[in-house]
Image (cartoon, rainbow, N blue to C red; front, side, top):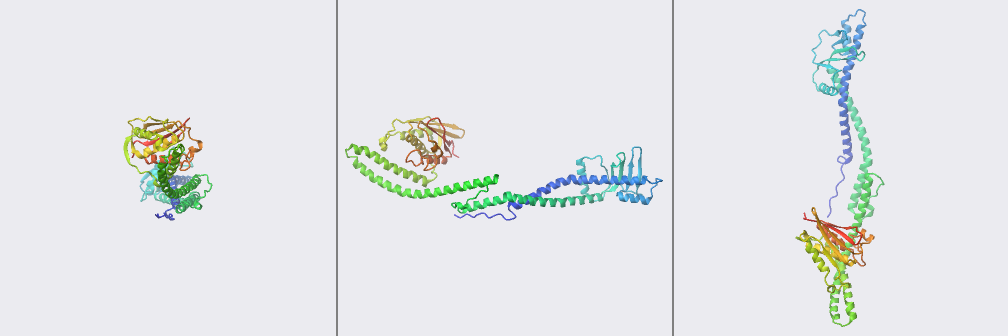
Length: 472
């Protein structure tokens, strides 16, 4: 089934343009946060400068020989100070230095020496949002003489226009800085992140088209950061997937061959059974001694093919769920494995095997009884064939899990066998084994929502099985 391969993102939906726009957006936010106190400071400095200009104008008047103020000179001084009137407050007196004949009514009084930072910001927005001219009376200490308090009457509109011009300069500068910084960030992130991500994405797509082709595997760049780790992990995953697909292909071929071999061996066994029936009538000790061995050899070959065929062909076991007592199931497994050897033509008798079932008789489990019987029988048979003389089953309910421990007193597992314990065809510890016993056990348990692990012990072999108390 062909699946549609996702198209590459366009220039307007990819990460590159998003990073560019986000960089511009965040820089503009930062500039707005900077602009707020800046425009407030600009408004304060504007009024402080007008106070200084007014003070300087009064100094010029004080320097006149007779102290009288010519109307024309006074109007010029007020024009340059951008004020309607100027009043000086000295420690000993209040002096009206110069004023227009009919100054306008004052709308708002501002003391530049008595306002907080928040107050300046609030008043700045109030000024910017005005749509009419207000007449301001501004009072403040002269920076030229701290003992002199200067009071001026002035229009608000020129100050508001100056604030607009200042804001426009800030905006233009912010746009330039944003574009410059965004371009640098874009180029840097494109080199560090976007290009490697595109390379990784392209490798995934190529691998998806042909996972068996080793040439489509990504070549890690050698970087030591998260991108490098991603590349190496992707390369490792692609290699593992390719090997798994190759193994799956080999297993499929093996399954087809095993099906034919199994059919032929069963026919051969049927013919051999007929011959055994005739040979059993022969009263010859040598024949009676050899006959079970010959039968067992053929029977084991058939079981080998059947087991391999079942593993390759069936996949996940089909579940027939029911509720039953775990104690009874383990007992039945022990009874079957302890049946007289002659019934199976086995070489070694099992009469001396000790099967200890220490599970609580009242413990119930919900699962496929036949599949779990098969799993426990496989584990018991593996222990017997490894040389164990006693097998012990215990179980304990832990929250929503049933923890089962299967222990034996055998020789234990070799170190090389522990690493490949659950790998098919390579995990067997006995000569001639398929290595499918524990693999099938694990598949059955995983189908029940559980698992099996090997526990390190001083002697013998112990496996821990976990099963869900209630299947969800």
